[in-house]
Length: 264
Image (cartoon, rainbow, N blue to C red; front, side, top):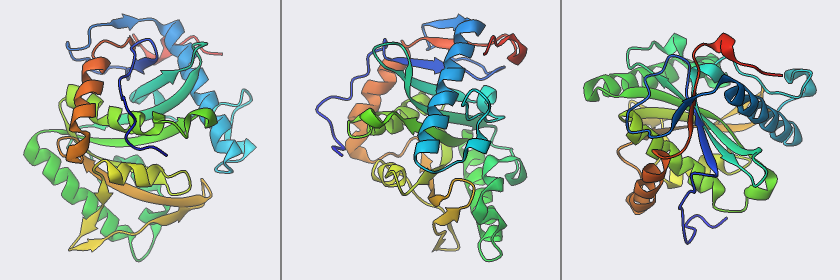
């Protein structure tokens, strides 16, 4: 994969953001709309993309999809979603950005349910590492974020799209006020490798790096990659600046309430 495409410019016609219910939407976003029906349609399309891609990759079984082929998560309406649309307006790429207050407890994070958290050797070390990260977020007065739900249509995987999506999380974090965060990423599709190259790293506790692990739910090798939005790999600063400047102009769809969703 070409990790430095000739251009990382993102057309606002190809991107859309779904805002979490109840979120404060910064005034820097210039195109905010309350359109529950459109929000719901894109949410369904995104969940179907995730379901299709994860199923094809063998990461999930049919029993983990609903009757419409949707891979649903209870945190979907609590998170930001950056969606890439194809020429027909269908979702061809997505990433979920779940923002927490820096006072959140380890027990209330989605990461609490990963296989490493239940490991006798590494579970307590994972908890200690996360608590150290949360303390750092509190000292800097920034949010703590979990990034996940990453999926790309197969035809986009060998383009710069994966890198653009990853860098866009840094751009979004900048607009939202900055963060320290983690991403659970697969080794199989090079997601973890991409995140490390743009500035991510391993969690550490007492000078010891936490290892990757096998996730029985998704049937693949995973890594937990930590990152700080203000400290990407310096060679990507220019592209993050460019993407952040684009993101403030993309449509941002908001909800009046989760019950307002008109979904199939």
